[in-house]
Image 1 (tube, chains in turn green, red):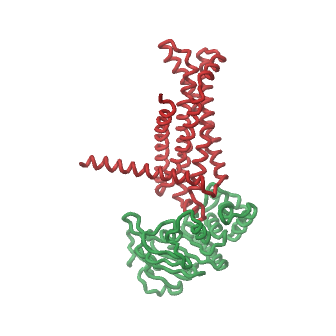
Image 2 (cartoon, each protein chain N blue to C red):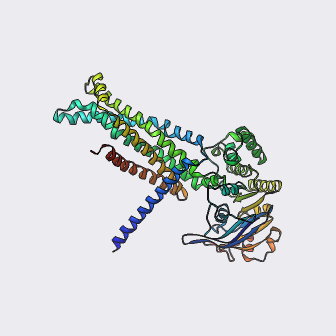
Image 3 (cartoon, rainbow over the protein chains, first blue to last red):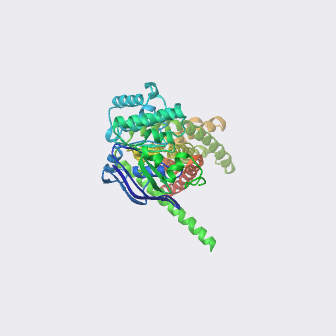
Length: 253
Length: 257
């Protein structure tokens, strides 16, 4: 279970999170929605320790992970439980696709022999619908959709307990977005992983989410099962679903 | 009053920057004693910084050695000292021009490349991805590059010194009419071990500074293409200035009477 209690974060004068409280139960898929620049990515990065919260506490399975120091065995063990798909895929340009996918398997505590790591990478690529030929290409040789799939394969390479997806369908055409959504849902179900996704794509929300949380004004405005989202009664959620310019979410930010 | 405030702020900002760079350098060096290590990345950096810099080092030093021979010959003629061309070319190349010019060329070629690469990795979230994959960017990106540059620069400067002297030799023998054997003997007889030691020591320090600045500004890059451009420019300027400043300090240490 991931729990955030009263998490605050500001960058200089720019206040982003003003007391986020959120609970994600084990094995569930939560989607966080909200307008651009509302701090959704910052929220994910706070959980991963990429951004240090100014105030508040974050715990995973009851263990406080708010202030884990980089390079410590505790932090390495914590990160080994996570997989992350970045918005722009964040593939390493200098490495071929298979080494991107098997990055964690080629070094560190999860290191495996090179041939075994290669086999696992090819298997994960197959799982996300890419042929073994792709394994030897470099990221720059792939289309945006293929890069997302490689990023997804990397996120699941070690079969992590928790997977984060940052805007998984941004920049993709609707068909490819649907493919990625199905893959995320299928993989999360198959592996029994806890998933947290941030997006403003409502088709992704409906395809992926067990639960939905609405982030606005630095706080979670509403959270509940995806099936209750349309009848939430929350004006922010209603405006977001309708894609309307009228409502509490300002269109000029 | 306002002028004083501006000067005060600038001094404070400069001190803060020196502090940040020092902490970054200490952190980088401290990883030498803390595994894991990434030998593959180190080997790649050795090839990138060392092997692929050889052409530019060779071209820079051969022309400089040749020009130096011409200048000394022309200048020396004013007081009938044309014969000292081999000695002055040798001492000039080994003590000063070899390490400084190679250092500046490395700042242009390697510092810029490191800064742009790491800055791009930062703005495209590759650095964040490294961290989520339980890999410390300081160990994986910074240390291999800084170590490789420090190790390989003495080799590059050694090669540059030799090629620079050969540039002077070619001009001296082919253009100025020196006897080939005498030119070489004068060069070898005049050089002392301290000249070579100072040259190679400077090289190692310059290599360290050049790679460190590339990594430091790359890691601190702002977002977007402008951020990458600014990081690259700052890295090259800082590396060049630090190399020249370090050259003065090292020259003072080695050769002050």
